[in-house]
Length: 320
Image (cartoon, helix red, strand yellow):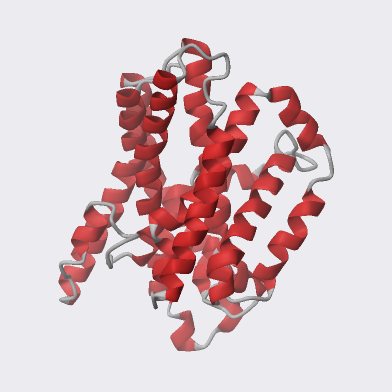
């Protein structure tokens, strides 16, 4: 969805492409919290240092490899500016970066810091309780309301819609929706499975329908629409857990495996394609998709995959 959105052609997949990041946030919250919850369930503890090291091996090599290319390219064009420090320190969600699409990585990095510290704090405060992480759903509700309030306050004080859309303290609600799903999946598995077996996707449809018709730059979509979208995606993620497509996931899972590097590099492909200047319209879409996936796979093969192998050798997951 994001790759289609970056293509920029004014068709339906372009209009809804931005919401792929919202779906990613929910998925990320589910998967990252699942790692931590599973570690706690199996070992009785959460290793902050190991978690952050393993995240670093996943995020930093691929990102800084991309950033080195970006710095060289901008320097050769005479366009390199101090904005690069925003990219270097994952502050893209608050300060103007050079690589604009890196804002979601800035949000993610802050989530990687906040979530494990929160869980360790709950462990310390509730170490004699049978359900250590029981406050998680209530914390999510507080974050949900707080993020909506921050977005509304930002709009009312004249902030540009994109600033409201990308700043971490206004977007952690989507990630914590996934954390709440992760909590129920790990510690209330039977209730989670029962809920997933119901046709709850019907509840998600009216919540997600506005993304087809309302521009992301609309104040309504940036505020209330963002809340409705994350809840709708959380419902879809819950419903889809444990299900698969006829014949398996196949190519979709393969793209998912390399999605981080594809995400990093697809705007480079888009900028070099020249399809907008040439007025090609949809004719260049197959070339764009193939090149985006191909360049992303090559970058993952050369940078991301070797570092992940080194990580799993030196710092294996405790839940492996």
